[in-house]
Length: 411
Image (tube, rainbow, N blue to C red; front, top):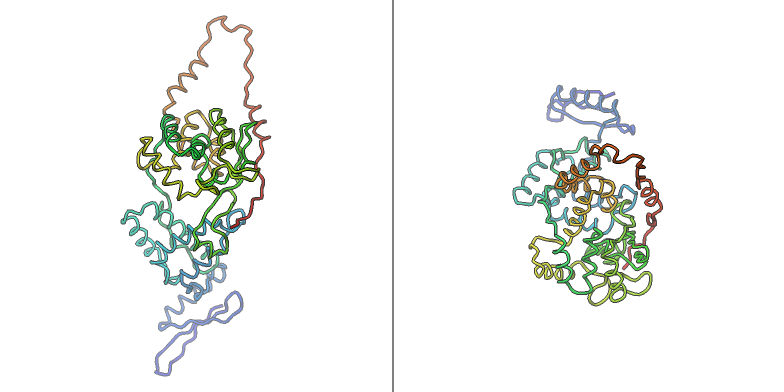
């Protein structure tokens, strides 16, 4: 029960002290100049204590810079794992470049919805729309944890749609452009380009493939890890090497995919000529051996892109986009696209469903042909063809899902 007590100061001024005990039983006091303010605070405090929503008024005094550093260090994924080194590097970069300069020295309780809106609008006005969305999501996540820690009453990040990235539509390569790109790049990288287009693997997933992940006989590639590289600064901060194997981005990232027939002989030739020896040998290596570095590859890819006549904005990741667009055009369902993408959420897969719109007339014609009224007597005694759906489900259920463990990050 909060009480209000009147007293006089040494200078003869009147003050009103609100006294109450917090949930831990500690005596708390707050002083006001006006009785009305004191009584309002006492009433509000009693209500918060009764609801269990009382927040220590001193809790939000920690500055954002310190709290965000601790947040990144202690953050775990939905699977209960520490953040991947590359994710730590990304978060630290976003904080240092875009968030801490504005909020670093501010007490958590002093970060308001108005200050967040002003900061976000400033980033957008400077043309950093995509970065603004990414950084807003990070700021919102950090302050949401502060709410969970009883340091804030509510999260000041409440801008509708601010965390949604509105990227321009990515280009899709034609079959001719894919092969022109593969022909234009150095021989030891040809299969790497084609694996991205034919299999839809991310750069880090393809770079992390070892011989044991490729089964030429059964035409499969298994993704169970990715190769990640961080800066020396991040490596020193985390006490790790600059390069190592980590798990896929999500549990859905563990997957075994069929290799399209045209790609099989190319992979066989690549394994024979360019890959490291032994089951743990890397499938794709750099020009001097060792792992394939993204920085080195980017220059090679840019040169090949120009030779192949692809637009300047075409990125290696657009080969994954090309793969998923073609898969969607082939009639793949959302669930099937999710599996190939290695995504646990349908959001990414649904982005490719627009690709099936161009086939609507073709599909309608095919359905019309299949369901057209039969000519009288044309199909007397015809047996219905059995569906292969059940067989496909059985085959998929027997495919290996990948081990739960992974090689620890190492230098």
